[in-house]
Picture 1 (cartoon, chains in turn purple, green):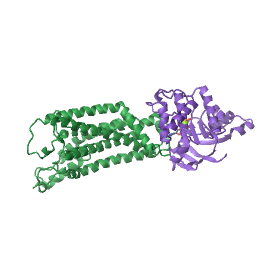
Picture 2 (cartoon, helix red, strand yellow):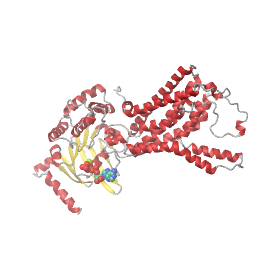
Picture 3 (spheres, chains in turn purple, blue):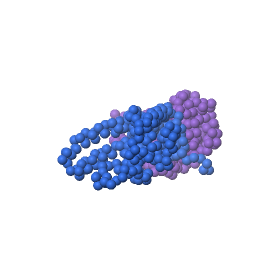
Length: 247
Length: 318
Ligand SMILES: Nc1ncnc2c1ncn2[C@@H]1O[C@H](COP(=O)(O)OP(=O)(O)OP(=O)(O)O)[C@@H](O)[C@H]1O
Ligand SMILES: [Mg+2]
């Protein structure tokens, strides 16, 4: 399948004089596991916010499943699960109650939600921890709960902003396996933003390099392997060039 | 398929539960209960002094529970005008910014719900809590009053109390909206609480003082014509009415003291021939109508502003 499901047209976001996202054009196809790789402050999160209508583009637009994110955010949010960087939960209620709240907001009937919550907690490695107050969760556990929270509404697309931060190495491996599983079994389209090259390389099929709000390169990892190249070489090549330009 | 509740009511339910379970609510409840007891005590004590027979409010014996005091403590109505803002501010000052700081706002907003739905639901939840509280308190006062004085309220008195509750709720709704507005503006809950409290203190303490100064400076000379004096009084009244607590006081005065027939200055012509008798409830509401509209307008302005600020704001996680 190669139907475009996320399309960015000339997307630009300016904060005053500072351009955080600079005329980005990008198409993501259905079923892709797509990586956004870039250093801190590259504009990854800003791009994602615009995809969900959480901030308005200065110019250009985003179309997800054919809906414009700025004018039809609700339709977009029905299809998209978004895991923000440093996700937060209501501390005074348990993990399960937090998930149940999200389920209710998405109109999932309680009985169905309870079954799903059980399954998802197991899937993200929080089995037996659901009765704990969310305030007592560790950073990594919160991140895992966040993933369950994203999956509860049965999205077509999931957008993960630095989802592995705070997760231990074994957890990261599980997490990447989970991404593969979600992509293969459930047919989800996944957008994975990160600054960790290694994780992006393991998890994704296609990668874009981001820096200073600009899209530097779009790389198909399978093609790259055939050519015998390495992502880290390409990455350093781009960022050294970028560094020289700005000297 | 439609056996699920709409997201709006889901949020309302959760918010109400949050309020009721919070320490803050318990503390506010405690303060209000104390108030209630105190003013009831002072009202009942005030009843012991002989009743002047020419007072037209005497027919409305029951309403005096809310307006009379023996001087040791303010009456119930005055207590509410002073503490109502605290209740509104207490429930509203951190509704939006805490969610933002905890990172739950961005999660909430990535669910398929409209942004206005969140503000509306939070407002409605806090307002329902306040409404239940006020009705409970005023019925408590009525119940105790009934036990002590043994005269049941007339239907008209009962409705006046109900309208008094509604006006109090409206008044607190204004402060609630103001604090929600600040909770949208300021990222720190402490800042937004402090700003709301600053405005509350300004209007309840400093504003009357400023008006006093203005009145002193601009008061017409002793030789002034009645016309000039009338206009001066009207001018001072309209300045006073910029304060929400003044609007509330005027509205409740009319509702709880049926003999009040005008809130502004009256000319001799208007007073001449008027029999000092109580007004029917409908007329009292009419007298208080401008004050009520003023309160509603102020509430709507705050609401609209928070809307405007919240709808297009960028929501990042934390
Ligand atoms: N409200 C704002 N006002 C001004 N500049 C902003 C604002 N928000 C973000 N920026 C700037 O936009 C740029 C992109 O930020 P963004 O959060 O998208 O980076 P990122 O790629 O997600 O980085 P990280 O890997 O650290 O999460 C940064 O340089 C940041 O300083
Ligand atoms: Mg980021």
